Amino acid sequence: MNKKRLIMTALCMLLAAAVIFAGGSQSAGQAAGTAQSAAGFGPDMLLLPSVQNMGDRFPGSWDNYGFLLRYVLFSRLLRLDADLNPVYGDLAQSWTVAPDGMTYTFTLKNNIKWHDGVPFTADDVAFSLKTAMKSPQVNAVIKSAINCIKGAIAFAADSTKTAANDIEGIKVNGNVITITMDQPSGTFLLSMAQFNIFPRHKIEGLDPININATTFYDWPIGTGPYRIKEFVPNDYALLEVFDDYFGPKPQIKQIKVTQMTENDFATRALANDIDYFQTNSLDIAQAALKNPNYRAFYTDIYFVRYFQWNSYGVQKNGIDPLKDIRVRRALIQAIDIPAIIDSLMPGQATPINTKVPSSFDYANNNVYQLDYNPTKAKQLLTEAGFDFNTTIKLACYYGDQGSADFMDAVVHYLGQIGVKAEWKLLTGDLTSQIWTNPDYNLLYAGLSAMAPEEAYNPFYSKTVATSVSANVFPANYTGMDSLLEQLWVTVDQAKRRQILMDLQKVETDEMLWQLPMFALRNIQVFNTARVNLPPELVLSNEWSNYERYFEKWTLNPGR
Image 1 (tube, one colour):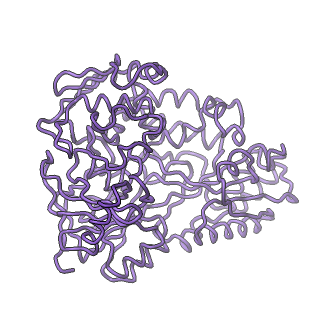
Image 2: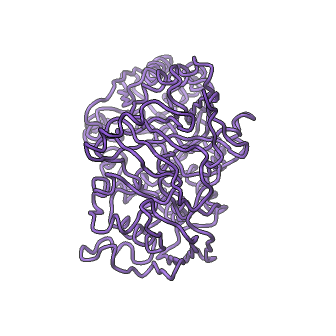
Image 3: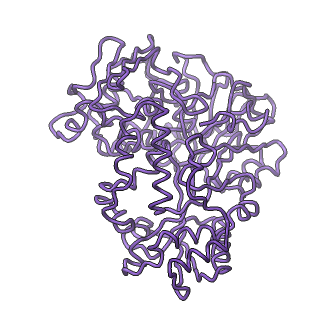
């Protein structure tokens, strides 16, 4: 990823993304005794929103791995830079990778403690990895990387073994942990910079199948710079600096995470009652900016919007007006995406030709160009023998006004070339409506990805054959299989880049199962009257564990 595109203005270099969310539980007596003490804020308290419901326990930290709460509570072996490269040590003092990508050796830092004072050891890392092998509640990219460890697949399938048992691919010797692979993984180091390490003495004996619902999340502990001080379910969580943290101590003494929805962000900002939030809604950001204390900044992340093709027709009726790829291309080229962006998402979105954001250095621009061209669109439809009496059924599961306006604009542009179209909002059981009994020809959808594998793995023929996507995607297509299999085991970044370029060529020349529309930049809003951040910070993907230099953040007193 090109670092230059992350530096939007000189001030952007003074800002780092930080959004956190929490959940958890404590006794009613504890809650009653702490509710009043955390009300309001002081000069040393950073005010942040939750982005998940804080119910009886904290939300999971393996299926969702980023955001500031997890960043400051837990540690990982490695940490990402602003370009999302795993180049910094976190728990690891140093590490080596064998030239063939089959062996990783991590030497861990000394004198690390868990928040309860228990010494951290390399065995905690091994136990976390083995527990994750057994757990389905792990991010797909991280899970795939961990499953490449020698013996992981068999270990996960063996119901007689627990994380207390040894596994061939993980060896611990003092503060050194050596990991041997069954096959190379192009995302292993990335995953080790995202995978939060848990304490063995807290998770041993818990059910890995449903780890998110276990007692660990009642009051999770880590080795990060902050620990939990107070928690009131459905209200707030209060974090305080962990005095025994192994790294530089933060200057901000406390962080208060308040229960709220995204719709509350603007109201809180107008009251100066929030120091930072991130959103993909331009309307919410603009509403918050009515308070002159706040500034908004755009960050390129892997977040794309597209129309998903239902190849089996509405409710699987076997009538597919979009079967010919020329029809699918025509529908994209009939829509003036740049004009819609200028009207609805100025500065936030950019058109794309593939499922890779065009700002990424591995975006392939040497593919079929899906630029706005209504004349070409009509020509393609005619060549494909499209029946203009057919009504294309569109669906959308985003309930915001911006998405509704986008769908209205799409229907309008299709009508301009003689294509009848209508759209509806999906509510309720989305899994059934999207995959099981799809009542649409095209579904407006989105993807946020840690790595490009998340964008392209769903096209792998064995994935299609064994998942609900078989109700939507064409069966028995193997055009991407070889490239994906190469990508999974390629460690060399230059070779990975070429494979990704080739995948995009196949995507546009042969498939176009998901019609690319645009990439959305994440909007990050700061109360710059209160929050000071050091100049070495570069705004990056808040959904990742990148280096935020959080120990250098300060707050302006009295604001």
